[in-house]
Amino acid sequence: MLDLVTIGQSVIDSALANEEIEAYLVRESETAIRVYESDVESLTSADSSGIGIRIVSQKRVGISYAGTLEPDEIARAVAEARDNARFGSADPYAGVASPDDVAPANLDVWANDLGATSTQAKIDAAMSLEKATLSLDKRIRSLNSANYGDVSAEAAVLNSRGVVAYTRQTYCWAWVYALASQNEETQTGYGMHASRDFAGLDIEHAANEAAKKATRMLGATKPTSGLFRAVFEPDISSALISIISSTLSAESVQKGRSIFAGRLGESVAAAELTLVDDPTDKRFFSAASFDDEGLASRRNVLIENGELKSFLYDSYTGRKDDHPSTGSAIRGGIAGSISPGPRATMLAAGDASPEEIVAKVNDGVLIQSISGIHSGVNPISGDFSVGAEGIQIRNGELQGAIKEFTIASNLQKMLKDIVSVGSDLTFRPGGSAGVTLAIDNINVSGS
Image 1 (spheres, one colour):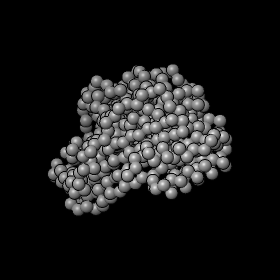
Image 2 (spheres, rainbow, N blue to C red):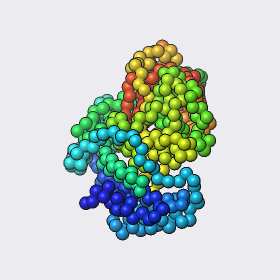
Image 3 (cartoon, rainbow, N blue to C red):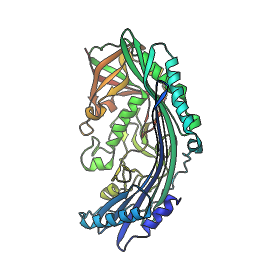
Image 4 (tube, one colour):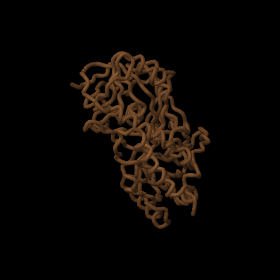
């Protein structure tokens, strides 16, 4: 089997005079297993590969792709991209990335044991997760499902300006939805654990998390409405961080679709907050030595001690602002277009534990889950309104469970109203890590 760089180089060698060409190649293996009542409900094991081609000629861009790495299909994709470029509109900023002087991080994010682990062992992991979750509390009567998944992926980016980049990574995860019942009431709880290798997967962690979240919601009632301090658990703050960091894309700023446009150097958040995008941090499951244009990944400080320091650039948006790429190019697969965006964002961890943060809350709510975040958050205006459930906090202690309420504020205001950042950085599959986060003046609408 030819390696991706060799295949990509053959594409680059086919470039015509006065033509820039870029090849983005991927090869992946994925497993997905779903278990229900001690039976395998579904099992998928799939291998895939493909290539995306981008050609720039006379500042006109043509793209195409092939869902295979067979030579005939690659040749077809190159010809199609070349033809598409003929009919594109000229863009003065169009072009492929040029190599820069940033050295790539040496990241070891590949585990050989994932590919060597049998399918039966992976099924057994999902079975063990179901059994462990059901054994933790007699009120857990059933599960929506117990699941196992993994990915082994490699990618290469080459272009006619001399960029040659290759990355590979593995990770696996187990997750479960527990259903706890009592007095004809049923509540759900979600638990997960992820690992770079199969040996590191902690089934008990995922089971305990799901059981705890499901059982503590039994007896939930609607809270009274009012302004409260909200304590967001790591999974919830991760979603919030992801939304905020997406508005720091230079593309969003240039199009006037960001709450941070024109605010570089301003204080935009509480002094306790430092927001970093760092795909060189191997704790992220999105960590990689290169971005999707083949430039070296690097650590970008976006907000430091509350002050807005930087936006995220790819080579295209960088040319528009006369700013170097920040190694932040992302694309939606071989058929996707390139844009700058967050790849591995996190808040600098604070010193307080989740228990210490809760202990400082006189009257507030612990947010365990939210719903409607994609429709309830406007990244342009900053308006924030989502459904939620969690636990009431009174006099520094967790009290009764609460449900069927909304929490609302504005992203700009929420950043300013942060009062505590937890020490419990939590990494899940995806592009952001969460911490326990306390924010004042959250409008709770309940009964």
